[in-house]
Image (cartoon, rainbow over all chains, first blue to last red; front, side, top):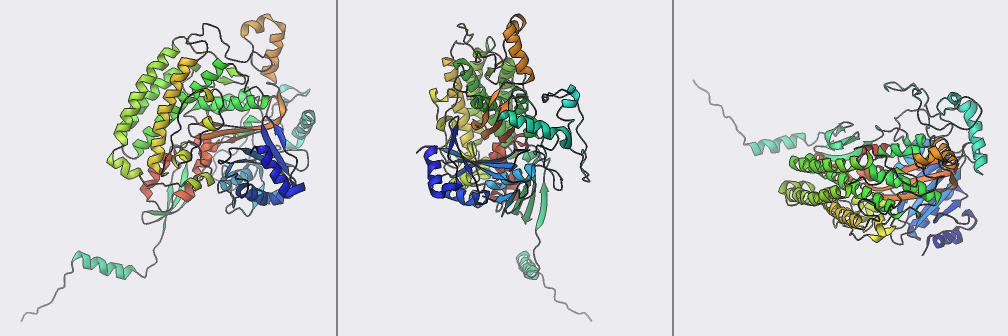
Length: 206
Length: 423
């Protein structure tokens, strides 16, 4: 059975909640419209459709559009050797969805990482702490409004908490009319230029 | 007048019994032991907070992130090709394999992964397999050293030196290779490389046999690894283990066989699997994987289109100036190539909007890249699915119940790299 048929089965079972499967480069993606039911969908996918391996959980920040975040689940079945991607949108105000640690144990660390990097919380997670950044770090670094240079954080007992020095790194600048120093991604502050730049870029993409 | 006093002498056993009775009512206290972040057995900067009851671990809380450099954030701010040097620093024991995996992910996004010239694909397969042998040799050497067999470490590192010489001849760097480009590889095989590689393969087979003889039936090694760190098939899948750790638990799964990329479908090799899922099985799987890598490399050297010195001038990159940098000579003499070069360097190759996930069978497991593109030369989001990260997440489940000294073979057999785990 191909991945598209599994997506169709999900759609038959959950109806309107699941979007039409989209294929790109041979990968099937379905969008779940109600992020609060992700655990239920995943449980069904594992127990009925044989997706016994959760490859990855990641998140995308669609800064400037609403809902802001997308959480992406990559599923794989060792039995039928098909993969499926399930995406679901999470708004910035709630920033919360149910955990899937009850379905796959490996989701534990993946969800902690998503929380650490993007600030999306997983309801019912047994131990939702930061994993890569240190305990007590105040920001979520993978959000698009977090500058590449970092922000100073006043956490005691951390040696380097200032902004990274500008060393003329290889980073690409966004197209605009300013000087190249002003367009360097690390000098842009979140409140001023970055937002417009990203909204502009998103439009171009569409 | 003398008084006689009876003195009662108890034998040691009786004294012990008495003490036990005395201590019975006292609540035993558990000890919390901090292991790492710089501990020789943790191979990098892994910290584990262990709760011990006597010498038995009752709880283990890994603390990772000491090597976090924000690679995913950095990737969002540079072109696809500029990120290749950063992939060297993921699994820094197999940088070539990371280069190949990343290039393939971007190529999948651009829809050119099946259009690569065959010589390029063969070179990439050889890169992956050399990296696998190198990473497994190090994993094996340090594993053996940690459990007390220092000699093996010296044997395997002699061979790794030869691999580094081969890699240096091929890429110009021993460690930070940055060899692939989106749409090809940086340069063709240098003259005489194929001969050197054949000579190396003859030597490494002997070396693997010698190392194995020192360990496989070594009483101390077997005692320390057998039935230690047992991971069942179901647990391995549930915790998302991949690579040799998954196969050690008896799951017959290898991405090179299940979803062949490059020219793996044209090569004959076997996938070794374990039966019990303990440290010893994982060790055996790695030994056998090295032998299979040698088999693959031999086939590649025989079959590579164009032969050793590429007499027929087979290309090693896709001849598309909008994706792969044109040659310097053309840039300096032709207007069109000059424009291509300028656009590629400043804006990067123009990828279509969309999202792809590509996973490659790396020495440590499945290294995956999820690329979310909104078009243009930089990814909107790049997620690295690091095998060591997932392999380590089993520790809180695996360690409790073992002796403190068992952590060393367990770490050695899981064979993780913190550069990749923390990204």
